[in-house]
Image 1 (spheres, rainbow, N blue to C red):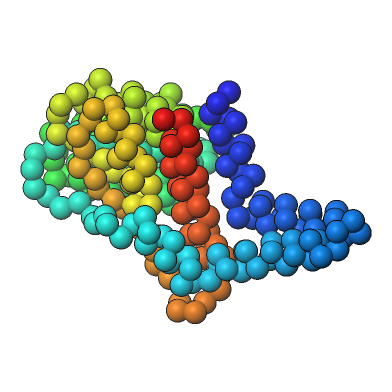
Image 2: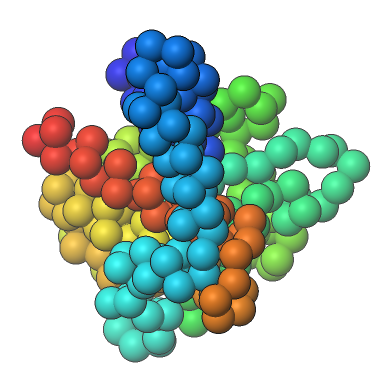
Length: 243
């Protein structure tokens, strides 16, 4: 219940639904409180416009991503932990073509780390949600398509979020050297959750989104970038409330 409640609250306060809520409130209050109504009617579109502005979206993304870099070969790795994202099942397509851009980016970075450590185990996670195929299973198929032996893959198809991924992974990894692969914007929260389980993992950031479309430019992509960052800060706030 708590998982779905968290998802519902987050969905309602992300930029687009929040802006729509402000506009709707303004329309409902235009007779009772015309000044407040006008403020709300202006606030919604201006909020979206600001978040779609390239310098703002890039600054927001950099606030989470700037202290992470791509993983470089070095010490031996026993486990490569690739966090799940999302997919859409289409049996007529290759597994890699069914993964979201975020999931594919994470998986390919995980495979890059694994190729530098071919004796390591690639750990993939993610539940089915409303899709008939568990995300971890589709990630596994995609990894096999890319040449990773099935014997070197371990899945957690029941993990619904990063907290569960960390909890399920801890008994498997123990004190072994592990690399944690996830989006750069998600790494702060992921590291804190894995460290809370007593795991010492090396970050392997990927899927960097602090990439402005153009300087002084408004775009839907910039709005999407801002939304990703706001989602992460909401996740960190949720963890702080729970702890």
